[in-house]
Length: 147
Image 1 (cartoon, helix red, strand yellow):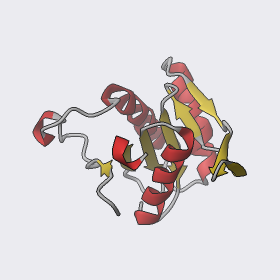
Image 2 (cartoon, rainbow, N blue to C red):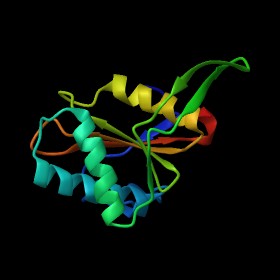
Image 3 (cartoon, rainbow, N blue to C red):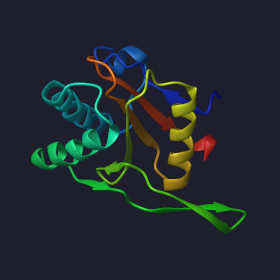
Image 4 (cartoon, rainbow, N blue to C red):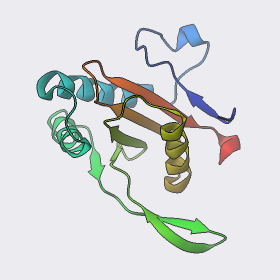
């Protein structure tokens, strides 16, 4: 992992002030996490990823959170489109949200999210892992240096 990103502590009790900095899109990511906690409480853990993604769309809609599912972004290499990336969700028009059902969030998922942020042009992403009874999540921020 490189120093051009920020991976926040998955403990919501750790405040931004205790880290000595202000979190980018803090209230937006907290609102999304609130939805994820509600979904895990009601659906339980260990389903496939798609039901959690769909439930996030429903819960965000109920809470008035703007969310778009399955947007399409070109993957460009040296000014040539070489593929397409379709993120699970874009919340508030600026937060990339990926639902996972994996043993744990690893460097692989974090690296993927960094690429997703570069492709979409957004700075903040949330990886939500619904595999276990306790929600695992990582907040990923792409700094200006890494763009």
